[in-house]
Image (cartoon, rainbow, N blue to C red):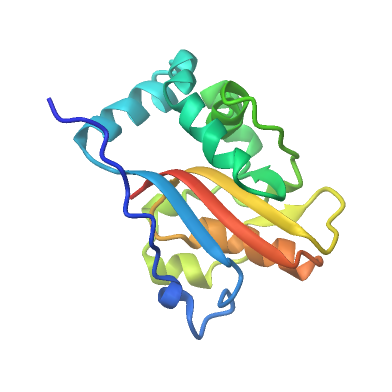
Length: 175
């Protein structure tokens, strides 16, 4: 059985050049690559609701966030999806790592990004709205997986439109 594979943490944000999301995210860090073992972990954690698995990466996440400065903002779930899943997987990862965070965004669309092409994702209406106070400072967006980056860029753009000066993104997995 293979293991969790460390991700190449260098991201090419050039895919967003020339789009309305250009410059929304200043840096992206992912801890692990998406492979068969990670796919199995995510399925067990998110869809079979094995919340205890949030502890698997707690120490590594805690160490990563200790090196960062800014307000941590988890990518929220759409309310109906949260009811179905029964827990917010991103919040649980942060809680298990004892990383303080603030909910400053609400998801405004129920559509799943994974079922859309990258072009459709980029052209979609904003996925989030601001629910808290945004000041001119650094925010660190956190999500479980970075596939095309569109979800993160949507969230970053909204925060920057409300005055954020720098947006970093951290994900557990790079898809």
